[in-house]
Length: 331
Image (tube, rainbow, N blue to C red; front, side):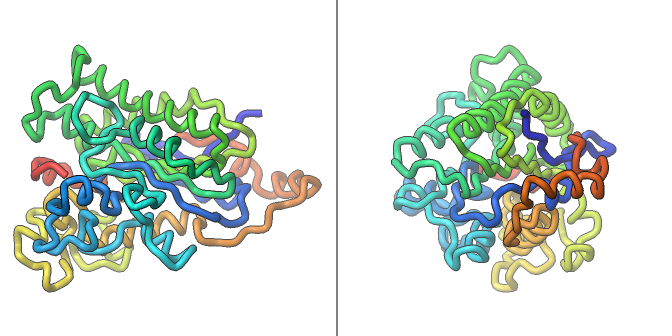
């Protein structure tokens, strides 16, 4: 039986998460493994660069690309009392600043390379662990030529072909994790809010997700950073935040000593720690990531499904960055 995953298509075609309380099979998570880019890098790029980037003198926190912990760190702190640790120090966070889904030949370990590093680490598969994939922003940056890269889309004939490949490869890696025995996966979409190429890429992502053949006991949670970014910029009060400036970053304004209060972006590319925390709280509310859940006995499923109706049975198809900020320096 194919597993049905939880996400929905919003009015603009972006992915929006729906509550997962009816679909989670693992009562509580026993580990966190992270694959991704600078939004969730716990220090791998800093170590690989010899401790020069991101520059702690600018207020970057413990080698993260913001002024505090990112959302996988916050989840790890809530579950285990410690943040995620970079894979280069033996930890389970394999994310690298600058990473893409598609490998175009640069030296940054992209998604497939991160998965290979995980396999080589000997950590094994934790069937009760949560595996996070957070990529896509740098693929869109490359497609747009934001950073002036030569061969930014590799050998692909055009931008649309590249974005389609990125979406399909992203989903293919989810399928690969499932096939290896991973049973709990949280993935994010292409995150640049309001950006035309991001909207195009997320359309390809919707189509690719529909081709997944997951095991019956695999839970896939799809969280839309693009939708979250839109919501937090439109109505920050709903997330317990003050009005957020999107016209200038905290670093550009020299406001690091204030904790970047009232800023959406820390450095023009990455969200502030306050925005990371707001996104984390939103994920927890939607997916109950920190809750300890009792798994129903088989005999109780029929009763539950009658009560939930179509909510529990149907597959519903449904930006950490503001489009205006996307031309800041590369992560």
